[in-house]
Length: 132
Image 1: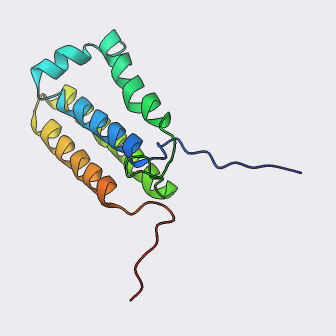
Image 2: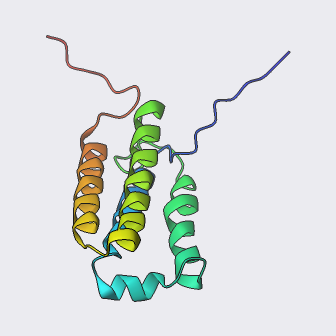
């Protein structure tokens, strides 16, 4: 007998995914806001490692439950938002280092915030839809 479990690297809950999105937005905004740049510090510095742990590890600790914050989201949607937010934040930082323009940080932060709003508004997995 083989037992297979579906593993997802994205947080399973609405609250966890919101924490990740807002963390990625903060990392993208660190290319624009000097105070965030100082807090995150150089890559692989203490601030950077703590930021990554908060963005990736802490949200996965929130277990699904009956509340709005702990509602389980569809796996595909959660993965797309999580990976997309991370990729956009990474692109903003890379473009800021290459071009030295703050436009990338603004655009990336806005795009990630739009993703966070979609996370807040999507119905949870298994939610009943009203019949027409």
